[in-house]
Image (cartoon, rainbow, N blue to C red; front, side, top):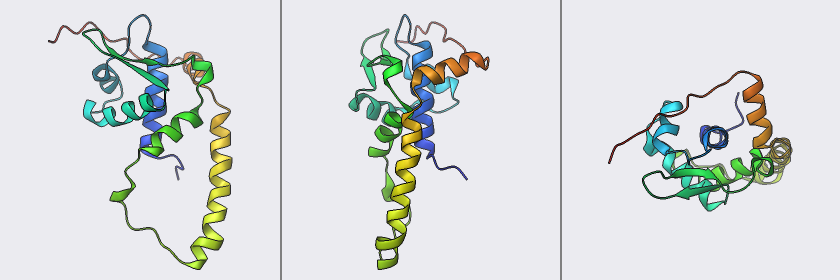
Length: 149
């Protein structure tokens, strides 16, 4: 059982990837998508949500892409998950149940668990995740030059 949505997991992976690769140039969405074996259009909505949350900064132009909007030690996994979830499209799933049981018993317990889960993610910085990736030998391939116009 995974408590983290695919969207949230992808958002964390994107931010950590950008933190690792955004020097000296921003990371192109195309290269980010290639490294994670995703279609670029799938990433764009998540990347834009992260820009709106001031986690990432979009850079326009031929050498454009995405870079961190602040220091990686100041961004937490919890920040990223909140940004990803505020833009989530929940309309596609089944309708939520509404009853006294759900409203007065189940929802309050889920809220307590959610706060504990996010508190744990708030204690993990992007810098820490980058260091763990380095220590584990996870070396994502650096993108090669792309001269597509």
